[in-house]
Length: 264
View 1 (cartoon, rainbow, N blue to C red):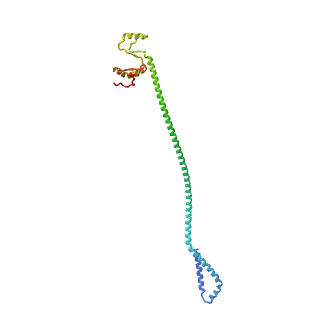
View 2 (cartoon, rainbow, N blue to C red):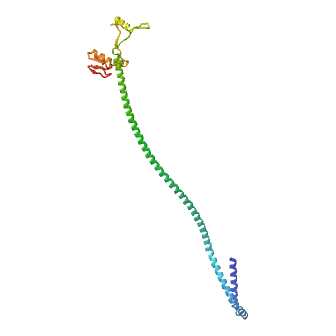
View 3 (cartoon, one colour):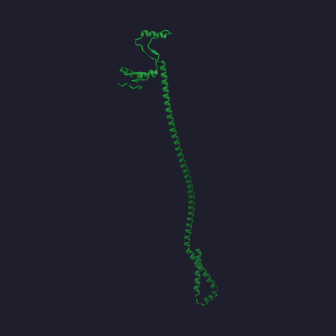
């Protein structure tokens, strides 16, 4: 482009020189001028075309820097476009991740709701189970109380039956007389009646004891109240054991509480 521009400038100078030489008034140049008059219009047209080209080249040269700036800006625009495209791709990926997070959040929310419902159901079941356990506990306590009461009644009835048996045994043995510390004979066949008769005849009035033949349990019960009985008799207070129920002590005609001391 620069070489072409220099060539046009050179041709323009040549034309200018030729134009200056045509100003000579001598007859010969004038003839030459007339000879060349036919070519003048063509030269002018060529010159005019060169001027146009030169002007265009000057204009192009003037526009070269702005065009370069525009090209640089276009390059920047390309870079910006590429960056925008990359940013769009990044946004696309980010949007995909956001959708994934939203789906995960929705799933987690559903799981939390299900867990809440499960906890509420468990709480209801727990409350129902607790109420059932409480009812069962109350029923068990009531049953135990009933069984305890029945057991107490059975014990009391058993005690009554036991006492009745003792009283029956005592009644059946009340006519019996029990002797202690009578030496036994060495013979295998002993005549008990004869031994007692001999004892009564020979030993009566001595340290031997004679008392009613009573069951061991009644003897123990009487023994526990014997001190009260003796104390009452020593102080001339009416006191006696019942014949039907030999362990029961009556003082002044009233049943005396078992184990209660006598206060004078």
